[in-house]
Image 1 (tube, rainbow, N blue to C red):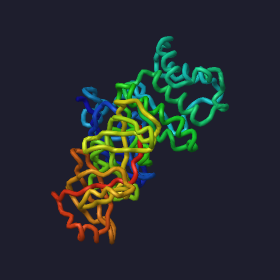
Image 2 (image 1 turned 120 degrees about the vertical axis):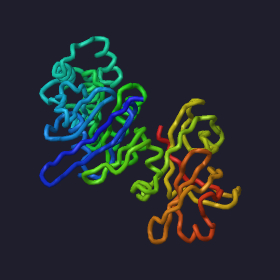
Image 3 (image 1 turned 30 degrees about the horizontal axis):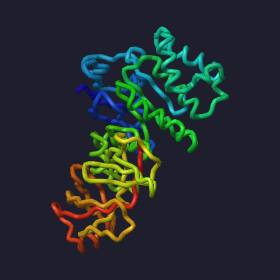
Length: 358
């Protein structure tokens, strides 16, 4: 498997960015962290837009920068598609004009088949003759993504494309972002400080704190590492990969199988065999020594305690293995004591709520 390898340092005034990570050159890698930690700056460095950056950057076997060897591939030769938070479109041109301008700037000749396919994919055919200022936020974002794809990039960079959108526009755009994940063979680096976006879209995660990368790895692992801040946040959660196995017509519940057992969730009917991703918040998981049947909780399955760490003065986070799927449970320290929770103990995880992501 090919990778993106980065060891980059940039000083801008009092801010120092020191970022080192390695991530697969496929799928969606989220650059995640609080505002001001350097996510967008790191994206600029990868695009070649920060000439003062030092270090080494490579995509697969192609070295884009190596300060020791005096290698620096300029931005136009890196063939990245860049989607900015504000869409970065020219307001005086039509949608068609913006798409053509972007292709010419990238030195790409128009290929009618590719143009038509991209326009259809983004659902912007009816918008081609409209001016940018007349578009909604979600429509502008789709035009910006189409423009980036028409440059035939080897990597797609996305800088918080949902941040400036209202709730409805976000909901409209998310299915297109999910299709990017499934339809593209090139890597996507996606900047966000919203964990719900990351949980829905990403395969891999690079976690940043101000000025530095603290860890990187597969999304499922990163969300449940007890040595990282994500597992101790209010929205600490785990991701489960599941498959649709049925539908309860009487109670309108979708039935799912995952590595650790079965799930029932309130959801519209989905085709059998559909692969889905679900998110389980740590605060929605309770633990029991017995399998209670007279309860309103539908999703109960055995799980083994892997790790326990104190979380807050009265609470703890428990990391669980459910048939190879990892969950987190936030419980009180008193519960840890009364249930005699220790690594290796077998419990029943009671999941009060499950969110279907895709």
